[in-house]
Length: 173
Image 1: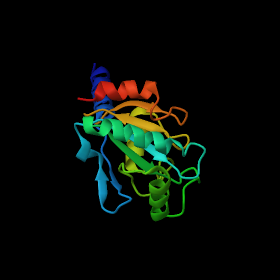
Image 2 (image 1 turned 180 degrees about the horizontal axis):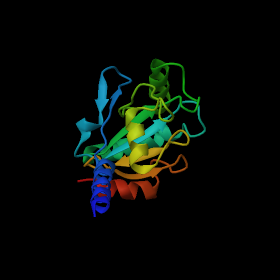
Image 3 (image 1 turned 90 degrees about the vertical axis):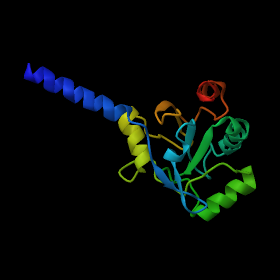
Image 4 (image 1 turned 45 degrees about the vertical axis):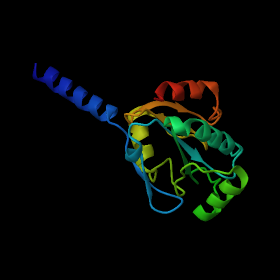
């Protein structure tokens, strides 16, 4: 009986940890910080990006999704990362590249690790809760307004794909 109660208690604790809303504070590419908590009540699409990758053209789709859905509450957060050795050398270079080539106005973090022992706490929490770890650049994590992961997508799913946008629209006010 004691073992069953202990097992039940451990299961409840594990479920509580797994269902905990995601949090995370990122250094902004513009200085200061960006916090997932600041967007509670809004869906957030978090995308690890890179400026020298075969998927870099997805920046245009990210900006398009931002332009279409920001007024309805969607936050699109670009997380430049050199975890796959395809990012420019500095945040200033990344910002200039994205503004000049894609007209990016959506929020962006500073260059941030997304996998391995040095992964940002947000990505470690996503991995712990869902098992999802970015396998390449332009992987996407969709978070609902309560801060929980709704879906994850690999690089081949474009930000403006119908599959992804159907889930975004279901989360909007």
